[in-house]
Amino acid sequence: MMEENIIKILSRAIENRKNAAFVTIISSGGSTPRDAGSKMIVFEDGSIAGTIGGGKIEALSIKTALDCLKKGEGGKFSFDLTPKGIGMACMGKVEIFIDVYKTPLKVFICGGGHVAKELAKVLDIAGLPYSVADDRTDFANRNNFPQAFEIINEFPHKAFKKAGIDKDTYVVIMTRGHMLDAECLIEAVKTKAAYIGMIGSASKVRTVMAKLKKDGVKIDKRVYSPIGLDIGGKTPGEIAVSVAAEILKVHYKKSGAHMSVNLEA
Image (cartoon, rainbow, N blue to C red):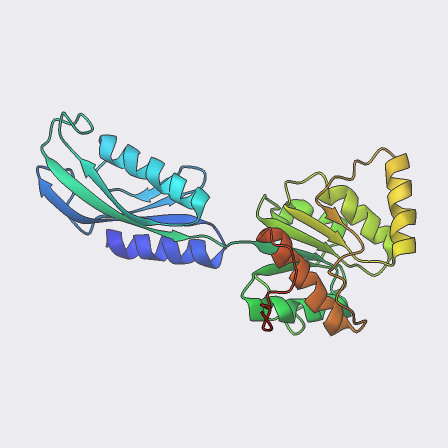
């Protein structure tokens, strides 16, 4: 029953885009706290579900799992449960395997208009989770954004707290007007978002930025506006590709240059 509950908890965490490390004892020898097959889930805040025996072995496993979550990579780890090893009275060795379930990034789209709808399609293809905020229910709904993990029907600038913006969130601002865009930008820079992109022509962006700076709003290096890479195209779909490409470029810290090799060399 315990293992079934653990699997359900893990499944729920994955569905809710909650990062988790799944720890399993794959072998144990000698006098160890738990047998092979014992499972535990470790979340980013250090909380756990299940147990692999408590004590030092569990504390070490939690620490290792948290390190794996930060790196985004799991693996096999061994612990020597002896006085010479980790100082436990019981004699034996334990091997654990840690599976990491971590979303590389998530996108929060402010606005549910035509470009946002096309961006959602591109994100779906790329396998990147996203949420959408727009007070207009005829725009932000399941018909237009079927794969969104959350749709928030509020004014976008009022939806930031509910959206749970963190350091793995990439904010895309493309509402129905530049004043509403500005309100979203004010809220976005208060968060820990990794990236903040705002749509708009160069002239409108300069006007908005000048006003915000005059009002004391600090615009930092996370802000990219006008949004997207300069790859050409003006249709909603073309803009969406440009925006998604910029998000990936920033996330993976790449140049965005051609990967083509010199075939004439």
